[in-house]
Length: 180
Image (cartoon, rainbow, N blue to C red; front, side, top):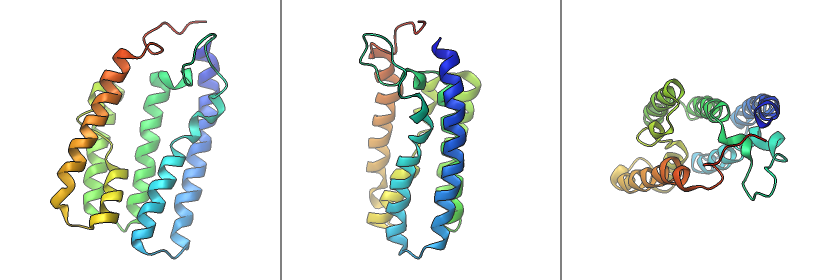
């Protein structure tokens, strides 16, 4: 039952996210911000935009469970979500005047999303982690001085490993059948 209900609501959510992403990120072109302030503003907006597609599905829960939104557990949510993330990052890339390091990070993530989509194995998202928001925060604090970026990389790999591997293996809600 969740499959049908989730797919229907997620389609609406993905369309909503696409439209709102284009409007919000494109509108930033018309406001004058210092580049440093723009970096943090983009990070906040990316985080908020990343939640839009799951809003129509928030009321689906399994009975007697405290699990968060079961619709986001399926690959038919995860794959389009990652693709919309990449689309958002390409808009940011254009917004930030084609930053070459940002392009490398987007291309790196694209490769991981491609492998995930073709193999259905989330483990590919660990080495090909999403580092765009962290890169923008790093630019805000340190500029193009990449002396400390390795610390950010190590922390992000640890977080991605926990999220895509350990958390999925040990989460009681994710390891149960989801048929109603």
